Length: 282
Image (cartoon, rainbow, N blue to C red):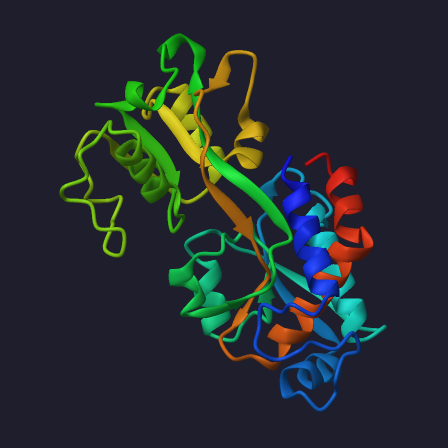
């Protein structure tokens, strides 16, 4: 993460009453809020998480248990809603997580979900609980060391992620691409072919396998995730770009949104989140 100071600043700001959502969140779960009451009555908080991101959320294939920073954070949220409220984890990907929020199958998502202005139009995000940056992982033998070395290469990205767009924007900012045909609002990695091509995958292990087989020449996503797939024969390009902030996602206008936001701010301010980040070696 290495940008914890920025998050702690957010926590201090939160203590001073600066809110992400228009309404002020309470530290106590208000049972008159329908979304919160539904969770209390159900006795279960339904949370979408990743199942293959070490440090953030991993599912044990034998026990079915989820462990990681975001899983622990979800459990803490559940206990704030009600002492007897349990967490029901559902594995999500970058392509499925928003759909499950929209359908009402999930109450919230904690799945390395990057906050962007475009996404905030469709879903509520809490104050960020983690900050990262996008990077690119390559095989050492590829001789790819810089953004410019990606010209003519195929890059593996996760379906539904913002990584491909961030990479193209970085190449434009560094004058590697002219960007004449780049439109951030309409960007589609499936059709982009100028200077660099993208292959989208459903999960990160599949991208790592494709990189090893040279089906793609680079693996692009947030650096904290790439660290999981780094080996002695792999390394990062020199550049990092596109700071990424992760937030808890809830349905737009949900009564749960402000409550969760208040919890994240409190835990940033009192050191709870910093402690969890260190415990999970992030």
